[in-house]
Length: 112
Length: 116
Image 1 (cartoon, rainbow over the protein chains, first blue to last red):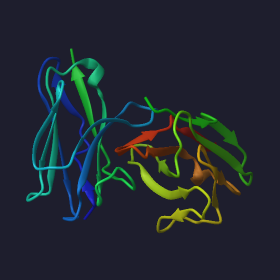
Image 2 (image 1 turned 135 degrees about the vertical axis):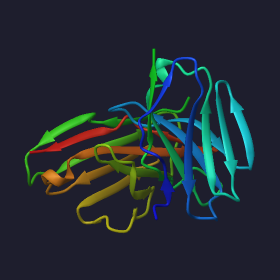
Image 3 (image 1 turned 60 degrees about the vertical axis):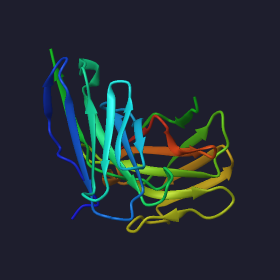
């Protein structure tokens, strides 16, 4: 079992729709969770971090964490073509961003 | 915002040669930096943790004698791929957390290594 699992996609959504990206993790002691966006040929850029159960909103992005189910998700509202990228879920066992374990990423395509 | 740079952005070398990649934190000091490798259509895999003033910590399966890491100052870490082979061709990315922002790792732009 992989430590961090994501559906590779591609996930295709029309412009303006909500994109829902999911991630599960295997280690129950994980404490910090991150979503990164990676465009082809580029390095990852941080979208959101979340540490507590529940929802965390930042603009069009909402991260959701359920530690009991070992599940973290990212919702993108009003999806734009510029959101088309690979979204990486990353997990760490302590409360910081050090030594991240990444999922393989979900490729999102926002269509016109 | 914090910026991490890498040099070179891409390099092509012959098999058997060594390649050095630099990672610099431009506006903050980084006692720790991380080196990742990413093969096509795969995720980032942590290779090693670079520690300023001490030896790097390598992840399981990463050859420390092949991937030499030197963290000589609070703003510079280098990764040297020694005796490179085609299977070492990959996208190498460094990152650094800023001490006051423990929940953020700043990634460099990456170095594309192609070994012929």
